[in-house]
Length: 186
Length: 430
Image 1 (cartoon, one colour):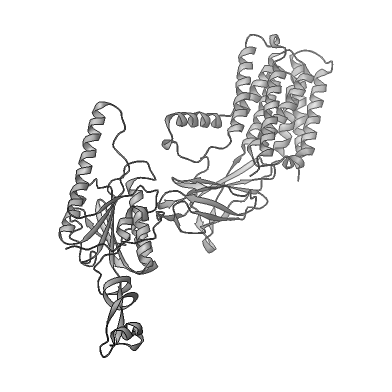
Image 2: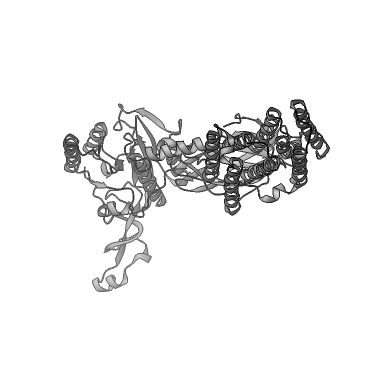
């Protein structure tokens, strides 16, 4: 079995995870008092998710026949494999971004990077090649277009106030839902 | 394992129908997390750009198709049902009825079963090589079948039990054989002391009426002036009873006295059956199980099956009843008894003494290669010395009774420790 594509996808996932955390964290002082806590959580999730990809699938051998050091190592590795680190990274990065002042284009780029990170993780942990994403390219393009629209809408000068903001959010959600229904493949 | 084990229903030609358990894939789970996190943060913070973050994930999830096969056919068989330790075989797996989904197969092996690297296969028919590293009747484990849709957003999991294989002990190397001086009157391949129709020249004697003329030795006839005849040794078979002591399983798995006893017994049985000797087999454990001496390749597999403790195959007696009370069919008089034992069971030692006193020719192959606890404190050291002295005393008393004893480490060929007894016939003393 060739491991080249898997190694490349793991490396890409690592780079994208680090980029997402760093991008969501800057500026460090802008996230308030709980910012460092969320940043630490995001960094830990990023590191563990890459470690999970590097570890690969659990070997089938029984643990009881191993010596104590190897046994403890295998237990730790199984713990890393079991937890949902990638999901944790997505949530932590978005929360960290939300703690900053509104900056729509910055959030848009973070969203695109998180999507790329999730696709890289998927390619790294499955035997699929990059070509498996080709049929999804139109949907990805449409999704990124909707993201750009939402970012653009957020940057437009608009009426301020709680109700107006909520209307803007609902409009974005409705646009996404309509796009999803319209672009659903037969 | 997320999927429940599915026993399935039998179909044509050994195909089982199994029902996959469908769920969102981990990839879909992550996209759902991204979409939900984006939308929730957008609603809480009233910032529409976070709703935009959710857009690509929502569109990808909307592409998921609802069609999935409710059942798939799975056919599993092994390329061999009988293996020796360390031998490889293939699992031949065919999956049908999976539509346009992709199929991935994962073997969850049981103890001593080692899956070997297999070529990538996305189709429904696959060969999955495996190896069995230790003897025994081994269940291979479970096969997990994973079906994925084109978008890899839904996964179906089903699990089927794999068949069992018989893994025989790997026979040690043995090319030579111990042969008794006194052999029963049955045609075989060992030259005996009596003259007969064999091919091994033994001497010359005077012609008597009725002898075959083709055996006349003309040079001797010319020298002596009377007709002289070549004589040849009769070729006889011998009865060999192999006794494997599996009552003490100590040491590292894979090189315990039980492993060595069975590997040695397998080698010996094969070596003697190859020259058409009659080979019997006795396993000494918590019970005594035995097979009467027999001939041929079929008998070899009966012996190997007895090693795997096939119930109902052999006659069984309690250990208290003892080997000495086996009927003549199981322990024919004049047999050569080859014992593979660590000599840790006192009752067996007493039994061997008893057999020797009854006139059986016995050769013990000592397969003990471990010592008690290797702790370095003085008490352990003292206990170990006492234990060694006891073991030496047991071996000395057996030698004194005229029972030869050799040591085999399990690594070298059996020919090496047996060499002093295979170079010439072993005198059977009464």
